[in-house]
Amino acid sequence: MSADSVGNNILDRQDRQDVMSGRGGLQSKFKICIFEEINWSVKMKTTTLLLATIAVIGLVGCSKTDNYTPAATASGEDIFNLNCTKCHKPNTDGSVMVLNTAVANKDAIIKKVQTGSMSMAAFPNITGEPANRLAEYVLANSKTK
Image 1 (cartoon, helix red, strand yellow):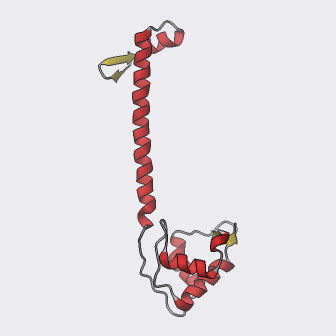
Image 2: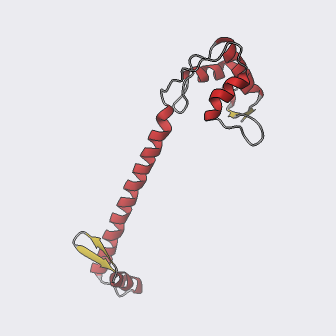
């Protein structure tokens, strides 16, 4: 007979069958309730741990700084391909990314590149003309939502 431990009680197949058939007494119903509550608690703890692990992994880019410095003559496409495609994979339609209308301008893109965000590393050394060329490339090759 298969049994699951619940504290000092044993939840066996007979208890389950008794409750399912309507023959189960209060003790059988109590055992099943306790077992299911403990089972639910274990599942919640496991889910919480999994979500916390995912959050930590997702925040690895937080406050991270990449010290890449592009050549003064680097094209926006070269800068994008060397750095951005590590995380920003081109879309199936050929666009490099989909931009929110709030950041679909050169100044916002340059600021985002230089300061980063919770999930994006900062590239403070992409400045001046290389930053302008990168922003122009992103704008020219992205879609806006």
